Image (cartoon, rainbow, N blue to C red; front, side, top):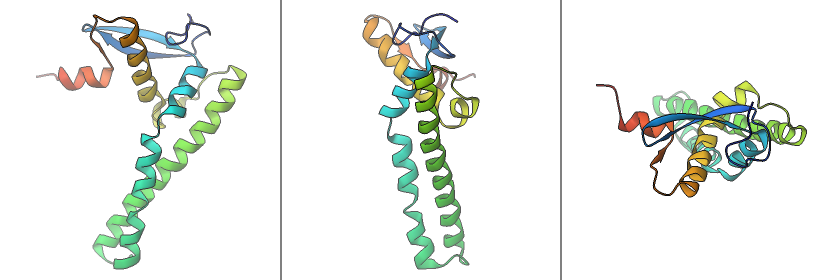
Length: 146
């Protein structure tokens, strides 16, 4: 694989997509850049930690009530997301240190791909000033199939 599109120092181990003026470009990224992007992103951890506040509803209404059951399901979802993101940080730290590949579960389910595409968009927006740079999610949201 070619050099990393963000740092341009290491060999890329995963491919992230970005749209530049409407044209899709696939760029390799290294494990170090994926780790740095995940390390700087606290939204996922804040979201998972915020959902833990639903346990107060369970404590006040009880698990046998409808609001209590609904709040328990939401809080459990947040707990799973929180544990998954923290595990992904540990796994990526090891992959970054060894220069090894980014695991598939981290790339897909722990939001590593989305966070890396955001970092790639930011890096390309600084590098190419007069070009509109979008992540695939932004492009698909703005250009929805009709």
